Amino acid sequence: MTDKWLSLSGAAKVLGVHPSTVRLWSDKGVLPTHKTQGGHRRYKQVELSLWAESNQMSGEIEPEHMMQEVIKTVRMQISEGRLQAESWYQKLDEDARAQYRMSSRSLFHGLMNYVATHGADAESEAYAIGYEYASRAHRYSLNYVDAAQAFLFFRNTLIDSVIKVYREANVSSGKTAETFGKMYTFTDDILISLLQTFQALNSHR
Image 1: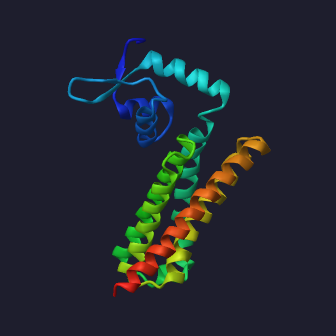
Image 2: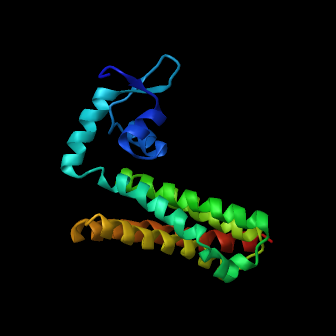
């Protein structure tokens, strides 16, 4: 049992985080990782257990566990039909609506990576997500106000979900304030990227 080797996805299940978070931790040298001759990542279960215990004691991986609960809450809120009331959403056909529902994942995963790496590579990550939202809005003939409203819908749904999860978990006010500070910093950068990209796309028409 203690010598069991795990794949990247298996390690993610053990640690309760998204596989992309495990990949980032591995790349940054945060997590004990081994590579096969073929270049695949492998993890010893005993090492993961010891690492998780030490980090839980210091509180370093709490945000990633919280994010798993946040995503569940977000999915529930979106499935309850809140999108139907959005004016920008009503302008889209079914294919476009499906694309926007899926685009929420990039925001959630990007935020998890941002928290997991303490902001490393945040600028490029925020730019990429902003570009994705702008390109999608442009492709479906939404204006820049619609594009911003679409992003803010998913951003605010995420924030509402974090509030709910943190309240239920009785997270300290200090930790909550720190997390919200990171969320606003990261998502504000995304919004700026979105608007800049949208403006650039329109100038090339």
